[in-house]
Figure 1 (cartoon, rainbow, N blue to C red):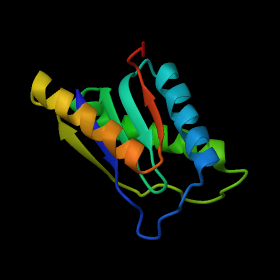
Figure 2: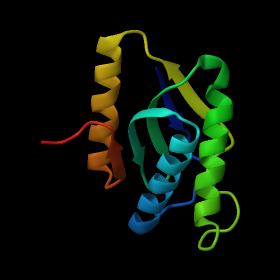
Figure 3: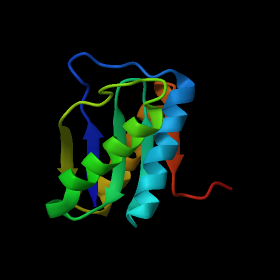
Length: 123
């Protein structure tokens, strides 16, 4: 399990709410095509937080594909670069670390008015 966080670009693009949801949906769509297990995803105005199960060897390639796909989904409204070139990936050490990371990501998303997605079924 890896936590991948999109770093802010130096000249960050600020996504309005409807584009955050569109970017989130594009990331989920691409993840499904890649058979990637996403635990939770938050698309904030200027960055993304993602908790997903991915091998360490593939994480940069996977993040690149997700960023590219979401950028293409927004290209009609926001041409050019949307996301920063790099990402910060952190290894999840154990179940307790995963739970803490999951809660952090969701809390962060709710306090920033981000578009939030979780694999957990509510109710």
